[in-house]
Length: 621
Image (cartoon, rainbow, N blue to C red; front, side, top):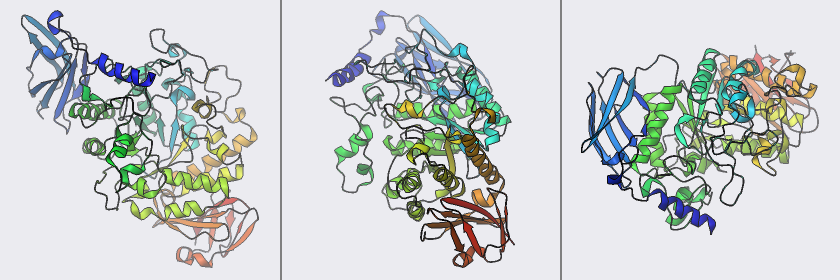
């Protein structure tokens, strides 16, 4: 009952009519905060907000900038200005002039020159992505740990719900650590401002340190360092040869977002007579027999009560989100775009947004989160070869199906059969190499805990991750054997990285601070990641796999420059493996080098495979 009441109050209170005649108009916000000359997209819809802003008559006089249309909506505090920017337009301050009676307001809005810095470079199979939660990774500036004027002013590393103080300055200080590990791209959970209260109306904790409840799209959270720190981080990462992935959220925002507190119009959100949660069920989207109400609940139901669900069929909402995506890439120079809760978004909108980004940045990679359990549902959200009525244009996605296959196989019977079967269905995708692969993330139990803290299985799974098709991604701390289950809260799998804070008793960023077992794991990842980065056959070659037999799973990565053989013995006994069965790929090769140990194998006619071990061999003639 309280959820329903809160939901209705949020909608009705935000849409109370404003007596514009009783107050002076005032422009408080303009979004996008700026734009650029020379963009491929010549049209921009500028949102102007303030008391009575929608009651003004607007004009713009600037060479090359034309005000095509002014739109007003239900809430008189909003105006939407459709601008066209000609190729001849020059950088400068555009004056947005609003008049009403004898009142004239002028708001400067900047057109900038585009810089030549790298942006939208994309990530490919040649990359190895590191996923980190900034608040829990490293603290480089204790002065921004908390702010008394924010809705959540708390900071306490002992409390799993509070902010812990990690920031972009701390992450920048660890760039060399990532390079040494073999990482080539960094993906942070969202850095956009989350100025959300710590508790809801029932006094239930609902921490926002993870970043998925935006409250101002055009502001990087100041507890992470703000816009300047984010831009500086991306520049430092690029200078070190690392790419940066931005985490996007289109489906919802925080319920204290500035436009939620004063909604432009009722249709800005997906509304229901009473509060309706999404079912979290994937089936109604692809099921040809599904009811419309089941589809609607999946798509338009709210993710949780305090994350209002945006109506992307509303053209003003769609423009706002698309322009913010372009603005973010152009402002900060990020290289790839990870999209949260992809399957809950309006899919025609997603196609529009993806197309807009790819038009402006043809090399950018886009991969969304659709947490599904089978290849048909997963294929629906990417370019695919299935006769769906709707055809997605998303280039890639997060490969939840392969994650489940690898982890479940190792966890239950230690076999690779599930992995083989998942990869055997790759024909449903137009390009499976664009999937981002992983073994865990910030929403799942940690990989090492899932497989029973077994170092042998740990190495086997990471070998598969770093040698099979796709773009591998690793969750922070996996390299130092961080573990835990999501019990009692998600924070249990989002612990602080030891050594990321001044005064930490242990510094796992250094060999001296790690145990022998942790160094063994770190060195294992570094050895394989470093080899992978410099050998195109392994990271970008074709994949050929053989049916697993008697607990042995063999596949090859190969191209014109070389051939790499991966042989996994998932049994608890050492095996002598004759290789005649694999002659299609081994013909012409007589020996090999063990990539992980550096040892030379004089003959590949029969391979000695230790128990519960994956061997990576660079074949030689």
